[in-house]
Structure formats: C-alpha cells, structure tokens
Image 1 (cartoon, rainbow, N blue to C red):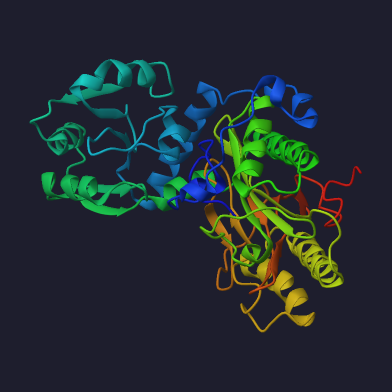
Image 2 (cartoon, rainbow, N blue to C red; image 1 turned 90 degrees about the vertical axis):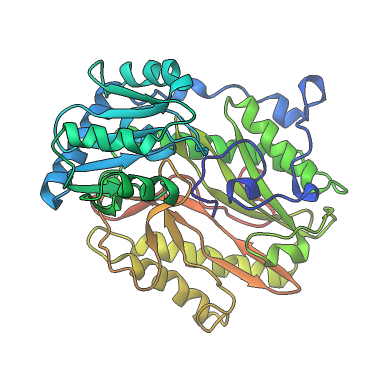
Amino acid sequence: MTSRREFLGATGLAALGVATPASLRAEPALQGPSDPPAIAALTSMRSGATPITVDERRGRLEKARRLMREQGYSALMLTGGTSMMYFSGISWGLSERLLAAIIPVSGPAFLVTPKFEESRAMEQARTGPLGKDAEVMTWEEDESPHELIAKGLKSRGLATGVLGIEETVRWVFSDGAAHAVPGLTLKSGTPITAGCRMVKDAHELQLMRHASAVTLKAYEAAWKSLKEGMTQGEFAGLVQRAHQKLGYNGSAGVQVGVYSANPHGSATPQTIREGTILLIDGGCSVEGYASDISRTFVLGKPTQKMKDVFEIEHRAQTAAVRTARPGLPCEAVDAAARKVIVDAGYGPDYKYFTHRVGHGMGMDGHEWPYLVRGNKLPLAPGMVFSDEPGIYIPGEFGIRLEDDMIITENGAELMTPQSPSLEDPFGKA
C-alpha cells in the first residue's frame, strides 16, 4: 500500500510520502556479527536482475511518439522522476532549478539544464536513448530556463502545438513554459506516459517478480528474528538490514496491536508484546521497479477473532485474483474482494475495509490504473497491481494481506505465495 515514490531505504511511511515521526523511524540497522542468525544467513540476490537497456528505452520513446501522433501532441515535457528515467535513462531529482527533457513528436529531443549541471546532464543524456544528437541547452542562475524551452520548440516549428505535461511536473515549470510560448496549448501528458507505462513487458515483469521475492525473503528473515519487547523501530531496522543483506534498499512500516487498525499507522511509539498483531507494509526497488507487500502476524498465539478475520481476508484476497482477467473493468476486482468482506459481516461498504483493493505498480509504488469503484478501464495482460484487502477494527486490530498481482493472458496471478496464517505467515515453520 506504499506510495508513488521509490523506496529510499527509510521506513515504509517515508515511502508513503508522509513525514515520519522520530518514534517510527527504523533504528540503525544491525551490522556484521550482531545480525540475528536468520539475517546473517542471507546472501545477495543482485545477480537475479539485469538493467533496462538503451535499446529498450529507445523502443519506449518510439511508442510515446506514436501515441503523440495518434492523439495530436507535438511534444512531451518531463522533469526529474520515474517518467524521465523510464524514457531517457536519466536519473534526476526535483528542485527549484529546472532540468527538463522535451521529447518532440519527431526529431531529436532536447534538454534544458542549469549550466553548472551541464556535464552531468550530458553524461546521462548522450549515453542513453536520447543519443549523441540530443541538444543540451543551458541556463545560468540569473536566466530563465523557460525561454530555452521556447527556443527549442520554436526551432522545431512547434511553437503553436500541443505540449503534454507529465503529471509530476511542478506548476511553476509548466506555467513558465506556457508564458514563454503563448501560442502553445498545454495538456496532460498522462495519456502518453501512462499509455506507455501501464502495461509491462517481460523484462519489467521479471524485475518486479524479483523485487517481490527479495522483499518476501527479507520479511521472513526479520520475522524469524522477532522478539518480545522490541520496538516497532527495531523491527523495521531488521527489515531494512535484511534487504541490505540481499543487495537492495528496502523498508517496511510497522504497526503493533491496536495501531494496526489504522491502515497507514500511528505516530505513537509501540512495543511488541506476546499476543499482539504486527502489520508490516513496504518493499524495495530493483533496477527501478517496486515491490509492495504487506504481512500480518502475531507474536505467540492469536485470538479466535483474529484467526476468523484473517480467514476472511485470505478469501477476499483470493476472490480478487480469481476475478481479475483481461477485459474486465478495474472496479470489478474491488467489488469481488469487498463482497467477501461485507458478506462476512464487516460492512457495509468502506466501514471496515476502508480503502480500494489495489493500485497499479511499476517504477512507482503507486501508479495507473487503480482497482477502485468507478474505474471502468478494462484490465489488460501485463498490468500489475497490489492485491491488498484490509479489515480494520478500531480499538482492536487490523489485518491486511498484500501481494503483487500480474494480469495474464487468461486471468491473473500473484507474484508471491499468499500468507497461510497469522502464526506461520511464510508457511515454513
């Protein structure tokens, strides 16, 4: 259930884009000889993933240009983030200084970059799919980058065309481009970016499967290292350290006992005791592609009510994956899982199952499309979603099961085995 941000190795709440209170941050990861045996035994899984190639990114650019032609776009504007990486291979953060890639419907792309960043921008641009022909236009600190966008578009005969704005581009940048080129029409670039990114190819799916396998293995090692009296930060530190041992940066938000009834947790410091539920939610990034997995388990013996709710959750998650298939509207998957929960007495509607059943996944933890009521978009092979029904009982506990789901040619499948029970969440006791 984590956000549209890459996992940065902090807690799951940081990945959610939520300010992380000090009480919830993963405590410094254990190192070397002090690692618990289950974590010390882990070895790197990095050999299981290969990077996206320049040729693959060139194919993405061609698809984007085809979609631009079909839908009447003249160019696409990207700034730092996952779409920039997806199409160009350029890894760049966002700041008040504009670095933009402008992808025209035909002909070479151009970059607008701060002058002092020129060598770094050129290094990435000209070794990637934009190629040696990519024009790099620089601006000094007292100059306007938007005038360079205007210059680049005018030189390509696009000053009166339609510029698609990628959805994470800051308003100050898109507004600056609009004022610099008054004849330009600005439109959402999402039909182009999502049109390319929503359906994953075989390489992307392999990376996501690998990311899910890494996170599940890290969770299991942390679970085996769980002890009464640990704080949530200490357990989150175990999850982080396990990911590190496996070769990746990964994290999980951890909620204990009554606080698990809040889907995204609480700022209250929490200590793990015998008989309390832990709900963990997080993942990692493998060559830019995310995993997002939740597990709920109990230290010691669960109550009968906990077992009953877990069983309902398991059936709801199963209903979602068994319902999903190409051509079916996204909302039908949410409806299938929600019916199981409501029919079991945890309704009506969003009363206990308080969120949608799933979100799209890829380079972002959350991306298009969404498995939610009202979304009529048909499912297609290669789409990837979280499958994460939840039941949250205020003042008692919450249970969420989350695995990542691929839409296949004939149905759907989960990338990781479902959790079998609260006492044995990985089925290997």
